[in-house]
Length: 182
Image (cartoon, rainbow, N blue to C red; front, side, top):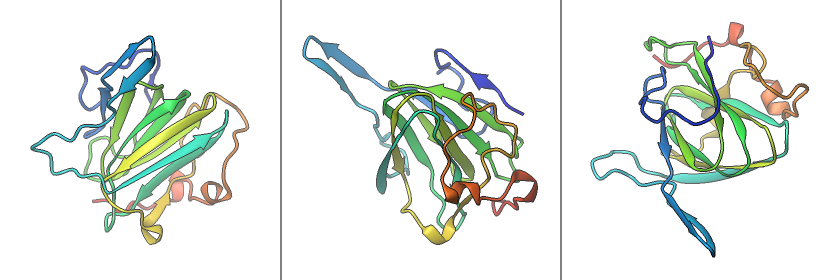
């Protein structure tokens, strides 16, 4: 199942049909000098804490994902673009969730952040040259890193014949994936 969200993001819907997934408008201002933005603020009552920050640069057509860290060292993350435009995909891998096995697709551009909860895989296709920043609440653990093959779910990737890493091509297809998330 997929919902392709295009155009302006609906920030009034808190979970976008997958529990814990949310969009947030990035506060920004501009003047003749340029612009200034504040992509992340931790709510005072939030247990979330950012432990690692990554960024990726992807040329047009690149697909990254669908990646997730296992429950032992799982990480929630917030992602946003500093440049470009992507089709972002979230797949719910939590067996107890009413949206288990469902994915959602969102067109992201700078100005919006997307929060991905523990137990959801994440991936995207660059629709133009794009730089994505990842704010993660757990350190990267190569032993726990896994995912689902990008082309095994019927995701409507808009650019055919994508560039994909060998690592991502070796991920198991959805039909063979065994979730470790309760």
